[in-house]
Image (tube, rainbow over all chains, first blue to last red; front, side, top):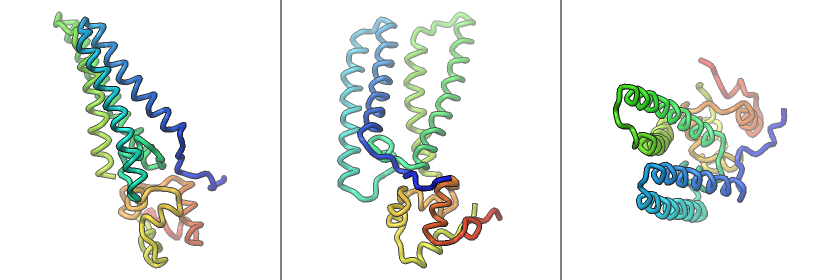
Amino acid sequence: MSTDTPTVKPGPRSVFWRVTASVVVVAGLATVVAHSGNTAMAAGMLTGGALAVVAVLVAATLYRRRRGDVPTGARVLAGPVDERDRRLVGRSWAITGFVVTGGLVVALLAKGMGAQVQEAPAVLLWVALATLVTSFLVLDRRS
Amino acid sequence: MKNDVRTLREAAGLSQAALGAALEVSRQTINAIETEKYDPSLPLALRIARYFHTQIEEIFHVD
């Protein structure tokens, strides 16, 4: 087994995929909100989301270039990442999936009992985003 | 998993950042390994062992 493969994988390709993933998430949130009839809110989410994505990427890139000791979050956003970063991201996504699945079950049960759940998809997406960020921060501090 | 990475690093006069740069991982990863909060992958453990010219079992201990 070769151990010469670098653990760190910098480069524009990883940044491209991070930007793409961020755009997909923001567009997905906006689409769900627009589908529920609130087009003004969807437009605001698109504008604000796009600005936030760009701002975070620029800040993370500048931080990475200026400091030797880069925080885990900045590496994940702007690269390069190492194996611990990838493991943290994977675990954060796993927790997020667990939480969203639970929320989905609750929403479906509520709908089955006759509750109005039109806003549930948008709420679930925001819960997913908050869970992803929070779990990443907590795991980063604990590991 | 207990390990002697900190001892070996300090004996070599290296900072966590310097060792991380040499092994192509972050300073935080070296710190997490030294504080036993993170178990490195087998390839990284091998690179650590080779960097210090020793064997994996001389650095990492199950007990």
